[in-house]
Amino acid sequence: MRKLSMHLKLNWDLLIEQHEAMVNAIKAKDAAEAEKLMHAHLTLLQYDQSALKDEYPHYFQQ
Image (cartoon, rainbow, N blue to C red; front, side):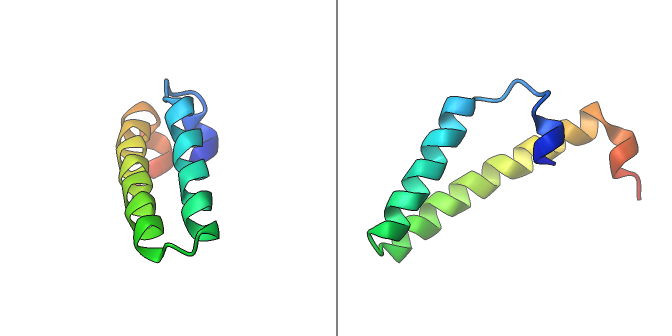
């Protein structure tokens, strides 16, 4: 999915910030913060998946 999403107009700065924040929370051993950040990131991934299904339906046939 991530490879396909390279063609979408994503906010790459936001994705990088999310990854950096997750790494920092893990380094700080702040499990609650890491979980919150990962949840937000994965929610964004679900949105990306929906957009990808619209753009490339042949990859998502059941």
